[in-house]
Image (cartoon, rainbow, N blue to C red; front, side, top):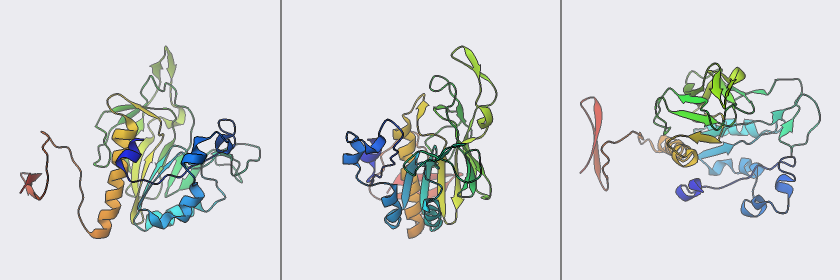
Length: 275
């Protein structure tokens, strides 16, 4: 995997008994042999980590996992979230904590207030993967994304900033009806809403993607965008501990910088050169 080849990462599995037949309970599941630990183990090991990426975790509402992660991020850690952070709310029925579905008390229409934002959990994004439905309109050093770049998300969850004054939106879902596959379609209540964003939480940072299954024209999402963000989030956390300064930028033309280097402000920019 790209993340494993570039990062020294630990892996934890999220398993459900009602997805893909027997899910991770199946004897043939590769996760049982390749990834022995689950999200509960991760929560018990939070103190080991500075950066965590949660991919489509479907956290159950009656656990204390969100509270534990909130405390952990507040201490100066970095958390990356994608797709359905919480279990998918169903209007009726009773589901165990080994299901991806849940029926919490009351009804919130699958909108969850966590980490000072409201996560609006949604399903399919019409037009994926042949038609783009997300556009980047704000560049940030943490993301390997360019202004105006277009992406296709399989699903259309989005985040709404509630409390944080530092809620920064990188990309939004497209607006209005659009032609895809010979028919008009739109993204419902996800239109123009934040699909990629980040914000400060306590002394830490949270980064959000509405989906992790993404098609891009010029890049491979997990290798070029996700892995870069994990690296950036990690350096943000570790540099805040040491008091060092970390920044990112594009270099043109490309030069190799090795050994001792000098960094200085010059002509409204930053000059980096070999000593």
